Structure formats: structure tokens, C-alpha cells
Image (cartoon, rainbow, N blue to C red):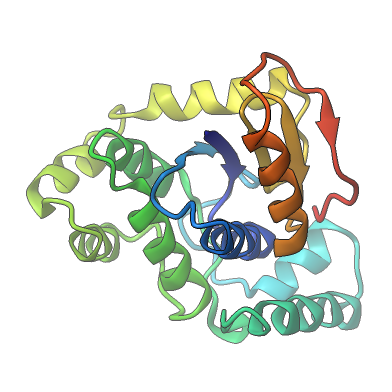
Length: 226
């Protein structure tokens, strides 16, 4: 089975959706036996490395929300995350450009370490208040995920390394009319948009297990999160 996941590291629903998928895979005894490919999606491709703005301020400006509405939305997401043992620290999150993090993830894919790296970058951003565009922070995270610091440094210090792969992911997402993330594509057939519940993932995974892989996007469950 193959699962392709379009995501961005600064999307709180993406980390939540990943955790829900992990829970479903564990329940079905599929952990480690499914090919999960993380595909890049850039929510804020033109944002600088770090503007100094808080996440609530950014959401208020981007979606024309009042500060109170933005904070209420964050509080709801924080509670949903807490239920699956994710502890979002919105007060200290540093909204930033994610291109380098995605390039590093595409490199990690070549070593079979992208799942480990993605988990640790998500954790750095959402739970530790880390700046995930900061090269030293990414290198430390890469080491913690089992990557060579020197090799990871070579990738990050070359702005063209794996950039084409990221751009290809983005283009493929546009081709599939993906306009919100997370977006899960199972065996090229079953689509789970948004951070659906673990139970929904279990249903879709069971369905996929019974069917051969097919081309195209034919089936979707409801409710995009973003």
C-alpha cells in the first residue's frame, strides 16, 4: 500500500492528520509496512524566514479574522491535538518559510528517513517553539532523525538541492486540484482530505487493502480542514 501526503510544516491540521493516520496504521498492524510519501505543499511560499509575527496575528491578517476569532480557532485545534498527545504551543510558534524543511524532507526520502524527520520537524515547530528555517536547528533535527549532519548540511547549503522535487510536488498538487492540506491519497484511489479521525482512516485503509491500486482520484470523504 502507498499513501501520498501533501502537507506543510506550519499547518496544525497536517501534524494532527499525520498523528491520526499513525494511530490508524497501528490499530491495523500496518505500522512500518506502508510506503508513506510526504509531498510538499507551500502554504506561504513568499513568507520570509521569520517575520516576528505570532501565529494568531498571521491568521488574523491572512483570513480577515478578528484577533479573538483567530485565537478561538487556535484554542479549538490545540484541544483536538491534545486528545492525541500533541501539545501545541501557539504562543511560541515561529511562523516561517518552509522550503528548506521540505527540501531536507525530500532528501530524507531517498534514505527512507522522511517519516522520522517529518515527525521531528513538526515537533520542533509546534511543541518546542523552534525556528524550522534555521539551518543549525534543521541540522540538529536531521541528526536526531538518523541523518548524517554533513550530508544534510550539503543539501541545505545548496539552495537548488531537491528544490525541483519540491516544485514537482507542488505542481502535482495543482494538477490534482489540491487547494488545502493535509491531503492523503491512498493507492491512487482513496482520498482523505483534512485531519479526519483515526476511525475514518481505519475505514479507508481497510477499503484500500481489499482493492488493487488504481490510477486517478475517485473517492473522497468530507470536510477539508484548511
